[in-house]
Image (cartoon, rainbow, N blue to C red; front, side, top):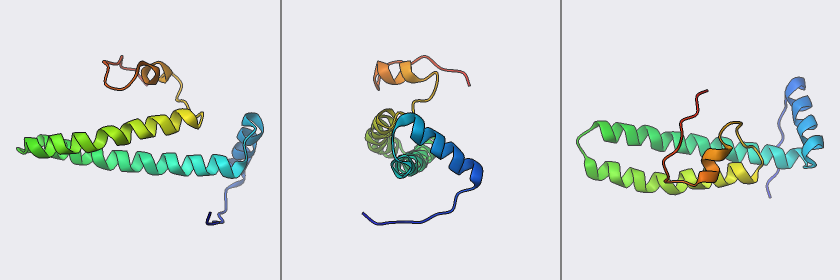
Length: 108
């Protein structure tokens, strides 16, 4: 596994240290999960952006293609988020309900 080095502000390092102690996981494990989640969300956002652009256009086939590509990515991101223990407050019941079912909207 490749090794990277990075500098963290004191407050972020303290938060990471606190979470590592609380969860019983290594700081590097938490950092890996956070980076993976961030990259998954960026990829998901790019697909959503492309999906919306396509939906606003005239090409229905392109919209269906993007939707087919997006679904597994969204499911993968949800699984990663659940397995990392990074559940977002107020959304656990949405994920537990399963993808594809009608969901209640949660106001933020």
